[in-house]
Length: 523
Image 1 (tube, rainbow, N blue to C red):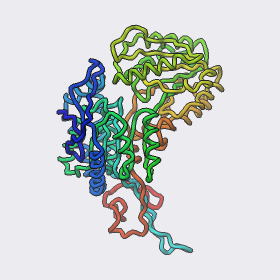
Image 2 (image 1 turned 135 degrees about the vertical axis):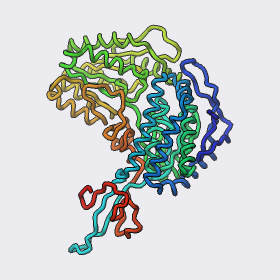
Image 3 (image 1 turned 90 degrees about the vertical axis):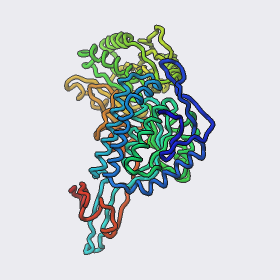
């Protein structure tokens, strides 16, 4: 049952007087649940409880944390239809999407459970001492990763489950040994509270310290800002806009003790269509990309917002086919009136840019909060001269850039901001003739795709979900997959430490039986 209260150290709390409701974009009306915003004292209490919990939770074994993460997954599944119904009422998304995202969320939790139980993720590294070495003795050095402390996670607007309360940021932070304070997203606070209740049950059933988890409500920026400013918070996870992510990054940098902010932000995900690919399969690619542009009403961080190609008759035919395909797709509801209004505003601003041609714009009347998809076209020269054309339009919108030659195509790619993904569409060995294009694309993205679409992020060890700024604030890290745990840890070396006082991961006898690097060899 949704209470509308905050959860602080696994206990309900409602000290504030400011309230709000979530919104059903399909019905265009407020939902019945009323939520109470967290107060300053509740923020402080949540952080203090997290600090206290860190003392014990950080020392829990990988096996114990694995049990905890699996129990969270079990409790989320046990929420059943109540969770799915709340998700749909707060997003306008279909039941199938809700169930798929729940499956991904549960899968992430179990993935991290398996990781921490196995234990090698701590990267235990040992250089045995050589006291007889001349002219100077070599000390015994042993290094591994340790959790950094309480982490603040911001729920994402477009993924109420997979990137929110128990999503990838929370799952990876809890796996590392860090307590988590979630700043719930106001668009789906009810969904967030249900998931939070599942975490609370898991804490109780596995005997974890209560301060390991809190969930705070708010509609404005104040609660999030105060959490990031709090001197005892040690890291931040965020998925959202460039404006929001950069604001948090700046706040964290100005603290007396700056902390890392791992923000995954905007991306237009350029797609390069090579000439022969368009000549031979333009119809197939037009249908495929019409579906990708409109998937989830374009509300994915990996939406293909930019398509690049060499000007040609084949490109003109591809554009005509794409325009027809995208206009044949029925418009869909966006997550919230605010997101819909932003889409309409940004789309309109883009369409007013000099040199830009609108090649497809769904002009029929649509229901309230439904998006009208569009595709535009511009020359490579115009694109290079106008930085506004480089910006993201969050929604079912894409721009085609027709370049006069390979040099201009390469230049266009080189001038792009950092992106999450870059795609090359090719046939057979055609790509070998465009080495400079591929090299330029690789320098701007975190994930290179061959003959596919960027929408769809596989949760696995080899996935890189991040990229050069502003795709993310630190392109050395991924927000998806097991290696996302590395955001919440730091290495510590032990020099000449007595064996019996070392962590189990570093003891000579390797009691955990984990894979370790010993004197330069993995064993």
